[in-house]
Amino acid sequence: MLSKNPKSFLQSWNWAETNALMGDKVFRLGFVKNNKLVGICLLIKQDAKRGPHLLIPGGPIMDWKDKRVVQLFLKSVTGLAKQEGVWFARVRPEITESAEARRMFSQLGFYPSPMHLNAENTWVLKIDRSEEELLSGMRKTTRYLIRRSLKEGYHLERTVDLSKVGTLYNLQKETVERHKFVGFPKSLFTHQMETFGNDDQAELYLCKRRNKVLAAAIIIYYGDTAYYHHSGSTSRYPKLSFSYFLQWQIMLEAKRRGLKYYNFWGVSSDGNPKHRFAGVTIFKKGFGGEQVNWLHAHDLPIYPLYWCTHFFELIRKRLRRL
Image (cartoon, rainbow, N blue to C red; front, side, top):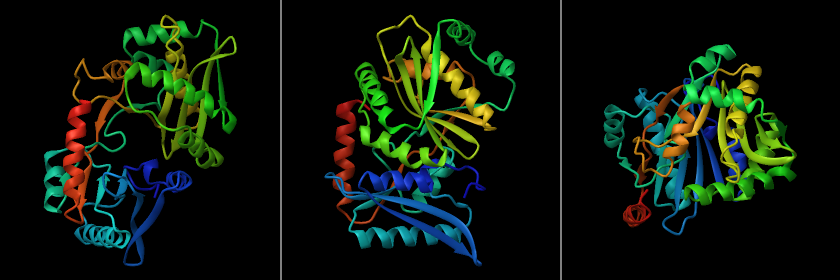
């Protein structure tokens, strides 16, 4: 379904395979109209203690204006949910956030989720321009630090070697401590590289200086976009510019591959300077680009027990100040 726009690796075959390797049950649905495939939907079953449910990340991919296909989607998801005995389905489609979209989902029987799903607020840069044009579109400080980083003796390793995933995991632990968020298991990094990496759809980037890895990231190449999906960096050298070097090298490789966009992944939604991701957001925005806000995750209740999950997540969200 790469011909569809928007599109997301979150609905790709390899994202399903990644989650299957993580031990989750996955389902792939196809919607056919007049003997033609008009939509796809990847669903991931989550046997969570707070309530079993189906996740639909970045999808389904279909025409939401086609009422027959939308009704087929609802019927299929409801039937599968009942078959699997889950309480609800959580959807985060790639539909731009708007009052109209929220109203449509409400009319279809969805409720806004207490929690977000994947990157709902992203920062995207158009990279099919010359290097000088890219640099000129950046914040002055960012442009300076990129140029300075090229003189600080860094070098880059791009690899699909699974034995090096542990380096990213260890750097992520430092990042988690710094920004106070819940990290991801090493197994998720490994399985992403097993699936996407084997199809030349992902690489592990390691930014080094004097053979010491200072930052690492998994970059996913899907469709016309490179995604800065997972990352970690050391906090031991705050005066060095290695993070700028890494981002610039990712852009150059994405351009070499003929891609059109670089997706920096998640940013804070409200510009709150006290948000725990405020610093990361300022960093990403310095490279130029624009914010893309997808419709917030919505839940489709299947059984009344869903409301137990709903209120539990509301309370947890407030306690964690999310």
